Image (tube, rainbow, N blue to C red):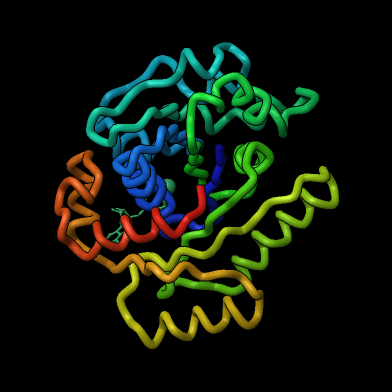
Amino acid sequence: MSIISVINQKGGVAKTTTSINIASSWSKRGKKVLLIDLDPQSSATHAIFGDKEFDNTVFDILINRLSPEEAVVHSEAFDIDVIPSEIMLSGVDIQLAAHYGRERILKKALESIKRKYDVIIIDCSPSLGLLTVNALLASKDIIIPICPEYFSLKGIELILETLKNLRVGLGHKLNVQGIVITRYRNRKVTNDVIKDVREKIGLNVFDSFIPDNISVEEAHHRHIPVHKYAPSSKGAKAYNALSKEIKV
Ligand SMILES: Nc1ncnc2c1ncn2[C@@H]1O[C@H](COP(=O)(O)OP(=O)(O)O)[C@@H](O)[C@H]1O
Ligand SMILES: [Mg+2]
């Protein structure tokens, strides 16, 4: 089984869109999938369930009030299990400040349920703080969505620096499966970015670029995966192809 974190400290690069759509594509192909929303903004929870609020969330797991089993809900539309988020999560680093082993709470919590799944995907918040460190220490693999129009090499270097700190400081080695090109519009800009990523930092870039596509956005607001909303759209095809490229 794999645990994969979707990270980038930049907001709006399609972390959430990518997480929910590849999760659903994996499920369509027979994988048992759990998605964890680890962003206090709860974008994945809202994208999947609309305005519905949840009493049991990932926050309760992190403060040790609940076991993961008690916070899992099923989404019929995406055909995946989900651990939702809530805004209380935004204060969790202060709450856990004095907690010994606070970086590994999620990892420990997942021990009890990870065997039920083929893949667990963690949609991270736009930060490299305690929440994301919990996601990273629980994961073996990461994928990094980037949006070529707003790309900065410095941003990727910061992520790699964080990974290095986890390796050197906490002995945790992560595999960067690759960069996902999202919301792609202009081939020249995109090609320049890919060249930079490959040549200057030597990371894999997945072949399936996700185009800027209205169906992706509309599906998001209708709370269904793009492969169901508009199966023949460019966005749906790209996310299906990407879900096959990522190793689970
Ligand atoms: N391929 C795409 N085409 C059009 N809109 C997209 C695409 N990917 C993401 N979006 C839109 O961009 C916005 C930000 O995406 P989101 O996944 O929430 O980013 P992040 O999680 O990195 O902050 C959302 O409104 C989403 O619907
Ligand atoms: Mg998000």
